[in-house]
Structure formats: C-alpha cells, structure tokens
Amino acid sequence: MNILELAFKRHKNWIEIVQSFGCNRDTAEDIVQEMYIRLDRLSKSGSDITYKDDINYFYVFKMLSTMFLDLKKKEIKTTFIDLEEIKNLKSYDAFEVNDFQKQYEIVQNALEELYWYDKKVYEIIDDGESISSLSRKTNISYASLYNTYRKVLKHLKSKL
Image (cartoon, rainbow, N blue to C red; front, side):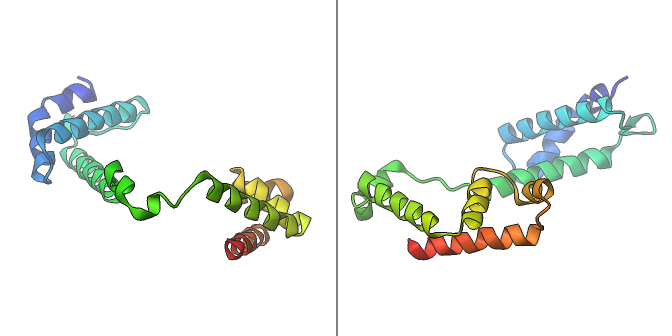
C-alpha cells in the first residue's frame, strides 16, 4: 500500500484537524489536497513517512498545521482595496501621467549626475541581478556593491 492510500484512509480526520485550527470546510479541503501533493512528492523522492505500517500521524499533523499557518500569514500580508474608494479620494485626481513623466525625468537626470561606476552598479541591480551574483561574477566585494547601491538609492530619494 502506498503512502497516499494510507493517508487517504484518514481523510475525514485530516479535514477535522484543519477545521479545528479555525478554518472553514472548503479551505480545509484545499489544505488537505495540498498535503496529499506534498506527501506524493516526498514519497517519490524516497522519503519514508510511515510508522509501524501506517502513516506517521504526527508528521502529517505538523505538515497540516504549518500549511494552515502559512496560509494565515499570506492572508495577513494581503490588503484588499475597493476601486470605488480609490476613485473617491481627492488625491486620485491629482495624479496625472505628466506627474509620472516629470518624476521619471528627475530620476534620469539624477542618474546622469552620478559617477559611471555607481550608475552602472545601480542599473545592473535594478534590472534584476542580485548583489551576491554580481559580486561573484565581478569579484567585487558584496559590501562594496551593497553600499554603492544603497548610496544611489539615497541620492535618488533625495532628488524626488
């Protein structure tokens, strides 16, 4: 009997456990289904999640509780804003495309004032290169690149 069959024998128990954390039934079902996917991945990678010819109940319990807590952390970080509220704000009308264009020009002018090295480091990191990978590729110390990037950000903020 494979690990998923062992786990599915206690499907109702897993749902009840997740609901005991304070979750509704639909979300509990989703978390349990995600748990089955993780168990399948673990079993395919060679991990043994059995205990005395049954599934390791404590391991699955910890997995479910961790998945529930991760979901709650994501919900806390998510902010929902109604578009009607944004339209009703007085400052909404104040933002026009011209304001953004002006700010863009200020940033470009501020970048032109910089030393070529500072500008190049900023552009590379701003394009998505991580500081650590840039450090490895160029043999320039991480601290030097980090300080240069922070200095340029500070300069740009002062101009805005």
